[in-house]
Amino acid sequence: MEARAVLRYAKVSPIKARQILRIISGMKAGDALYQIRFIPKRSARIIEGVLRSALANAEQKGLDLDKLYIKTAVADEGPMYKKWFPRAHGRATMIRKKTSHITIVLHEKEEG
Image (tube, rainbow, N blue to C red):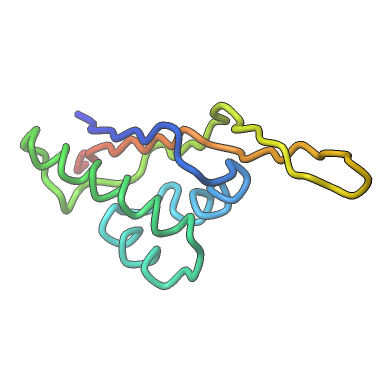
């Protein structure tokens, strides 16, 4: 059995989100939640919310929370917000704000 949570259109770059996801990938869910609290990055706060949602989904499905580990943690690219910023001599520069789709899948480890 597995539980998953997806956050779409998160206002964080996929590269910055992957830095945090690499740290917690493969860890036990409780240990990963504890580890994320000490990472001083904005993307860590966003991923913490997704992980808490995945744990709540697992609890809803009746899975044992002590046996859960992070099977996959992925940050895919979302659409890019584009806006124009005025520059000197009547020119303009495009500002690109990246978004990401963050997916965390928790799996129950069987004893044996």
